[in-house]
Picture (cartoon, rainbow, N blue to C red):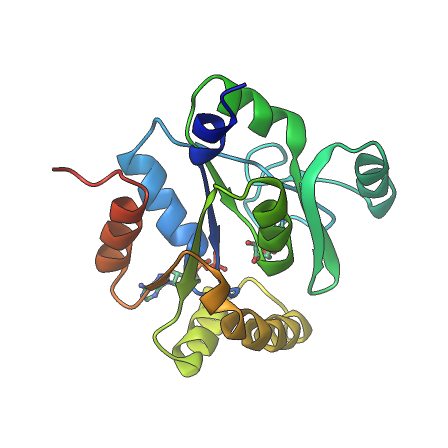
Length: 190
Ligand code: ADP
Ligand code: 5GP
């Protein structure tokens, strides 16, 4: 089985909440429609405008636990009071079809993928400063204060783990960060 090629097409982006992962991934997909972004399962409530099956598959805790016990997730973790996980089958199908796959997941999930797919490219997106991260997460206006506090607390632990990743990209200027990610993924124009 050509597992090396198979695994080499998997890339993963991790970084603290509010750093700009979603913003960067949206731009990346616009510019490289051949990329496939995995849609995660979560127990978090939908934010305004989020659609089931598009932004996430929204689950009750009970049905999420069932996914876990059935072995349906490639990885999963608890983050700021909710569970998040990557549905396994669609990722394997895309990889088998030769489609480049992108996961946008938090630190614990990235660590699990590091074990199951050691050849996957792991990119950490970091903010220019902690103050800027806080401004972004508050400026986004999507989370209640209690959730923001949990996310900023978790951000400190995530930032401390950045050296575990293959590369760290600082999202100061978005276009520069996008170019850096494109180069790392081999997507940049010649
Ligand atoms: P994440 O997906 O990592 O939680 P988002 O993509 O939702 O983060 O971005 C959080 C906020 O930061 C959004 O309001 C977004 O517009 C803003 N943002 C993203 N990248 C930048 C950047 N390079 N400079 C300034 N603001 C940014
Ligand atoms: P949010 O609630 O802001 O959409 O996501 C919170 C965190 O969960 C982010 O760091 C995001 O990367 C992470 N996340 C989203 N989907 C998954 C997933 O499938 N698995 C894991 N481990 N984390 C995820």
